[in-house]
Image (tube, rainbow over all chains, first blue to last red; front, side, top):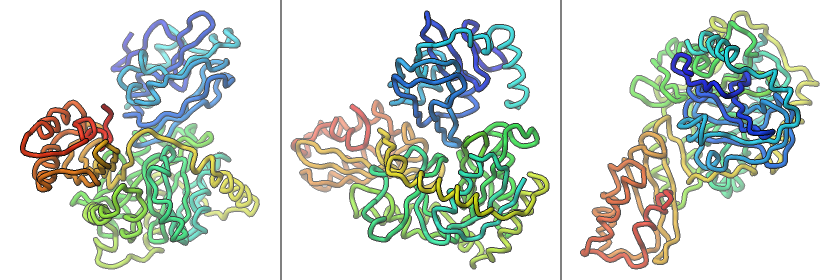
Amino acid sequence: MEVGEYLLPDDLWYHKEHFWVKLDGDVATVGVTDFFQKLAGEISYLELPSEGDEYSADDVVGTVETGKWVGKIYCPISGTITEVNSEALDDPAIVNRDPYGNGWLFKLKTSDLSELEKLLKGESALKWQEEEIRKKAK
Amino acid sequence: MYLFTLNRMPDLLSMVIFHELAREGIEALVIVSPEKPMISVGYFQDVFQEINLDYLKKTGLPLFRREIGGGTTYLDENQIFYQVIYSPKDRKLPQTIKQAYEVLSQPPLRAHERLGIKARFREVNDLVTESGKKIGGEGGANIGQCMVFVGSMLMDFDYYTMSRVAKIPDEKWRDKVYKSLEENLTTMKRELGELPDRREVQEILIEEFRKILGPLEKAELPRDFLRRAKGLELKMQSPDFLYGKKKKEVASLKIKSGLNLIFGQHKARGGLIRTIQEVNGPPEGGMIQGLSISGDFTLIPKESLKEGLELSIVGSRREKYELLPRIAKFMDSRDKEMPGVTTEDILLSLGLKK
């Protein structure tokens, strides 16, 4: 679906710091939302976690730099990192070009799928995104 | 929100303070200058690739990696730094990066105006004069649970030292770096004809920040806080943090927003090729408006370097598909010889992948 000028695919879970989660079995793929990348501007550098690292939900796992800002990358759900997008490390602007596709950040083997309840999906994601636009994208 | 008017502080500590305040969640406006010159690199910069470490060693200039982005900066007591540390939970203050720049750039802009220099914000993160010369730089980050917005007011600037600090492939290009800095960067001293009074600049700046941030409580840094800040300074000086970042791009020096000097070198079979490119716009895809090529390769006649090869590249976007046919046309021409050097070698010397 589209919320204003921002894409927000229906089939994903969303973390309030503007990260998305796509689940395949117990492996979660994580990326940033269209809203995140548009507000951040062109991403010039990424620092991502290493394979094998274990994180809890809401942990800071990396860093993102644009011309204006150095921000944090959060882990939306607990687990162990299984893969990092090396293409995004080589060409961080891919995250701007394709945030829900080739611009994914990392994959992790989840350790507690019940945490999905804390993430947003469907109607709740839509309401949250509308509120974020109202507050931050004026 | 606290106000820490720190004046001149020991060099590295002057830049560590705002990192520690943010880590501890202490909302504040900090006004400070390093008492001695120092070099600060951006969070992601590769110092081996971009910094003339031999020069730093020879001169004793300390090196600091900030948790703010951007490129290499030279800092000294003639620059006044403002650092705003605040919680994003404070709904009265900017919530997004865009808002932070829009709102928090206003105090230094108004301060410049009150001092007699009309300035404006220019994307991505510069304060520029009416003639478009940079007179201040800004940046930001999320550190700890805080948003941090920082910037500088250039009362005066040491162009010479800054021009020595960047690592460039060919020393004879130092003058180009110096001239580019001098042409594109100005200072209050240059604009006003004299160095302004430091105290007056600080007071005006604080007054303008008060209009945006609200009441500011003057405070001094407690001794135990300074001890913790010294601890953080040690961590930020650890070799892992200072030297551990590796980036894959070619070396570059940002002169001002939208203008970069990009340095490249490549060892071809026919010899080493070094390049310095003046790029208007982003490093990838910006316009190459100036270029010098040097090295120990053979090119006959030698005049075809400037009149042929360099000329074929200048005016192109720095993008391999646009450069490839231009370079190939020169390389395929029969009125020159360049043994052991291919079109791909030239692309690689420009820092572009095959």
